Length: 187
Image 1 (cartoon, rainbow, N blue to C red):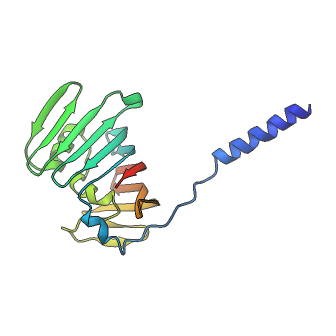
Image 2: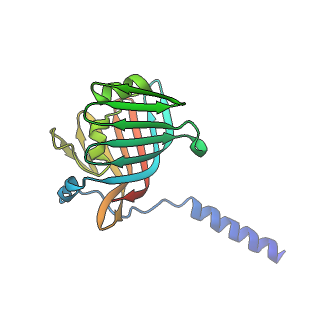
Image 3: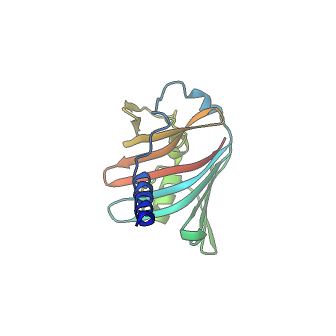
């Protein structure tokens, strides 16, 4: 009887720990982030969910940024359904299900035509770092900002290699939402 009570107590404690809310490592502050604009190479891995009125995508994400190229890999459960997106200033290359296609033109339009979901990819390369796109105006908000009609909210920040970087981000416009959880930064 004592053993059973002990196991019940331990199980209840484990369940209560699993349901605890994560404490933010730090709150988002837009000021004093200019040093991140000079980063010519960075990467992260995590999870992304993209939802709009008609479609939804949930995937593991790996994003590698260099000065001239963005490489984004989206993959489903256990790496199945992998899509590779390579962005350069002049073209968008998408490789999925053994097929490779190259597109020219506005990156955001190309991604929309292929995925069926509006994703502001050109601005996301700044937003994922907690930065505003320097080529456009923005409106500062609590825990984030608005830019290009999108509301960007930083739900949780983390420190990595001396930099304060986003861990949980929500990006929304109308019925479209992007949720990103960064599990590991390479900076």
